[in-house]
Image (cartoon, rainbow, N blue to C red):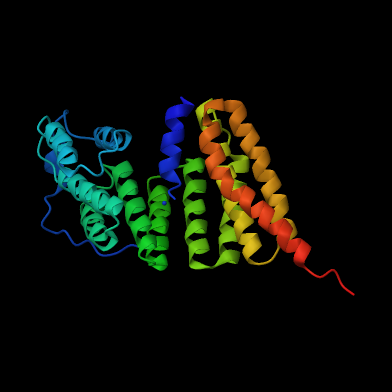
Length: 284
């Protein structure tokens, strides 16, 4: 349902390469897949969703308690250690301790890389975490490399999900924007939008998330165009974003408060551009 999906998409937009494996002491995963009751990606996702939707990130003991309660029901597996590292990373992230958070996310990634074929979703989630923390620490090249690693992995496992691909490219555009490479950011935004134009959603939820991503693409593109003084193109892009906002609300009217909050920056930019245009000399 769109209400729940809205929360998931909020997480996606917060706000967000191949390095050597450094965890040689972790056991080979063949031993751990022998049981039909083995842990899998969906179980890890359920744990993460319970923590996220209950906002337990400030309660470290509660998060570890949830992991241990689930862990006791399944055969021993190093992925639970990776999940705990990930939880410690989130805990320090919300506290603003970014360097400490990075250490834990890096440890989680070392293990997730080893078991990426068994836990592809968890692996991609951790890559997203380390990319986000790298941005917080202004390590933009590293942040970019982790997104490329996700794209490369998707190609390896023949993941043809075009929405996911467009999302990854949007993330690249966002990193370049934060780095100050506005032209590079615009190029990636155009590519992300192009992919979405050919993507065919099958459900209302998929249509909703597609429109929402398109909205964010146009919002960021307008800001990038503004920063390279292309004011008219920025205004055209803002008007397109407004149309997308209307389409989103036609699908889910309950999104109005969140949509208003997100579009507030867009409205401010719109007004600011109009003021800048008035201040530009029109000639003698």
